[in-house]
Length: 173
Length: 173
Image: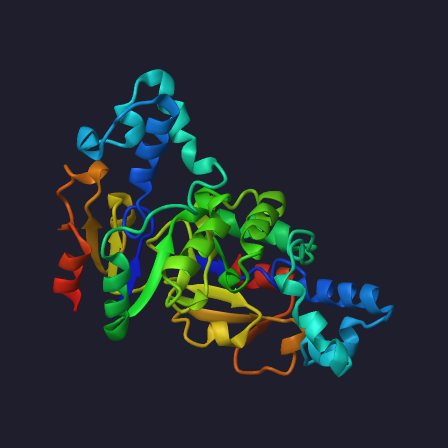
């Protein structure tokens, strides 16, 4: 099978980084638990929302992201059985392009450049499975769409949900 | 229809830039006509081949590329009738990612980020037409593959060939 894996919130903990940067900047102690069902910017006072929205446009935001738990190990296993592509809607953030390539070189060096995709619309991808945290990316995908749980999507219930990488291993290995 | 357009040698004159940089560096006067059927690096003395091969890995190589004649005008016309995506196998050159995004902002600002794709393998694209100068990109594409003429591919005869953008306009408008 051909599998497409999103980066932010599926392989890389972007949500956690937004919270961490916010807490450092404003001396707060916001947690993921405080934010269930919302974007990070929606969980902060209005006067600080633009600051959170601007994180992703800043140089150095994407490169230090932490990998999502178990993702590296499970993707390596999946690769033995399936054709794996990483597909990130990165074109929205030109500053992120090189950082995402470098990040993959560090954490997923076993995914070669031929199998890395930085794009916008994901419905142009031809394949069997797309694992993504954004329902709008799954919406027009012709294969099996799996919604990877992230704090912002916990109330979404139109897609097959996967909560963790070991759960994905159970389904696709 | 959904159309995918390659960048290098289809929208941007990468071949011409290789020749220009080579000529400047070595005080030569190589022309495209000298190179028919070959890559630029294959047209220079062996001791200089690596230097030409290294061009694309250098910062600042992609950003100043000149648009291919008539490409901007015809792509703008095509966009009125078709869904247009730009698909460049840029992941091989991490230094090119931001430069390609900035280049598109300058010359093809009417192609939004949602319709820009930087990738490796192109056979993962789901659509009707792929216009590319590399036969290996057309090989496994499921739609109509069109080989855009570049000096290096003039002897290739396994694909439908298009020589110029006005010719593409005649076929797809």
